[in-house]
Length: 201
Image (cartoon, rainbow, N blue to C red; front, side, top):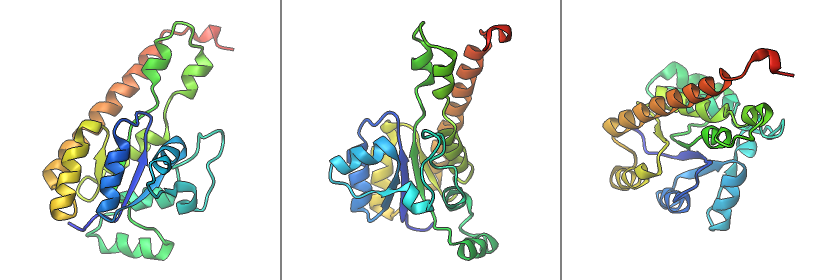
């Protein structure tokens, strides 16, 4: 397994992120980030590369499009032992992203307010977050994915001792991703199914 070089961090729940990110920087891992997460990290003196600078494409559509770009997903999804994947990455200038720390828009918290409108609920359906998580979890053999701040210390400890995480840890973290995205989609479906389509305007 290769040594980690680059992490992408984009969080709604930013609990403990400054300590985690500082640990990554201490291990010489470059950090990519977006929006409020990048702002918080910079406030704590942590160097961050904006994802828009990494991709060469701006955040747009009121933040609906931030990380949905081949430079991001190619960087996550390519298999490091696959020579054809590596060749394609070289041809297209894709750089590896070895760790993804993401959690999702707080849909359930939003719709728990009885005054929540359909439009407000829709805007709190995360698109980029689940896509990043699923991509990283699918490629768990090469990429570490973190959805739970409780895993930050373990991930940092493994990186500190061997430059990356163990395969067993990466697989366990991937399991947590699919548990999370399954619950997330179920919550969205359950809430939307309470609405009579005839009332939608």
